[in-house]
Length: 377
Ligand SMILES: NC(=O)c1ccc[n+]([C@@H]2O[C@H](COP(=O)([O-])OP(=O)(O)OC[C@H]3O[C@@H](n4cnc5c(N)ncnc54)[C@H](O)[C@@H]3O)[C@@H](O)[C@H]2O)c1
Image (tube, rainbow, N blue to C red; front, side, top):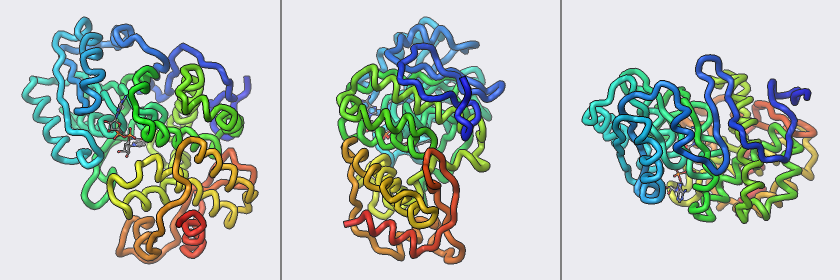
């Protein structure tokens, strides 16, 4: 089978849930991504070189649901299994949680062979991954993502970090996990709004990398929202395949990996201007994708029919398609990421005519604001 020319190594889309693990190809840092209804005990047995201590990192919402099951799977493999349960929420992806994690590692007698297990969504995964990156200059960690967003995006690729008051994800490291266990059964307990937010990141992969997958999503969105197991397996697997191909080609985001930020320049500014708790990350990204598509029509001559096409799919995914009205000067400052810097046009991930691929393009502020206003109340 030939690969999709635009992404090296990515095979054409096949709408069949396959049970074997995907591998992300990063030389000696390659690792498996297990997707499906998983047997965690079997996944644990497949981990090579387990040390004496496993530390489960989770939060107050996820731990009561899944920590006992994870502990039971790890106990036959590790000499000792400890856990640290953090408060739930993006506002806890910070120094304080990182410090309690490092203290817990010290108090548990962790060494360089200790393995951390991130059990939760992207917040737990980013935080635990960063803690693993810096404990004794780097130890192994496993991602056990329990939200749709973390299964299709944040658990794969090795970006870890915490937020500062000054902005999201400002402190962090590239540190790849040794395995990802994306257990679709864990999605059963996810609230509907969080599930829809994850669908925004699934939809993202269509316009930037795979039009056949986008067509498939348009045929199956209601089934996906009903969490049909076979459909979910296809969607999570294809999302991970695309993410893995992009990361394998550009692990440290020198150029290509930036396309995964489609909708994120607008989305981050929306999240930041409205404050925590107003829009979920995936909801903001969905709105940002609409604005970026609008800007693609203006700047690159993308067919205008793409805007209603994407809006309709986001609506069917249960996502908001109209942002609250925003003050233009502060919104531009947020997109620039620096209130003081006024010079230079911001670069956006945009879709060229035909879509199915993406490129970084500078656009004047007036054009970006027009795209924002087209999708604001
Ligand atoms: N590292 C990356 O490449 C990357 C990529 C995208 C996003 N992110 C980060 O991911 C974070 C967002 O992740 P998220 O959307 O998973 O949010 P999240 O981790 O806050 O999880 C959302 C909510 O769902 C709850 N939850 C998780 N799993 C559950 C389950 N199975 N059942 C019931 N409730 C459950 C959580 O406790 C939380 O309240 C952001 O911090 C973002 O910056 C990182």
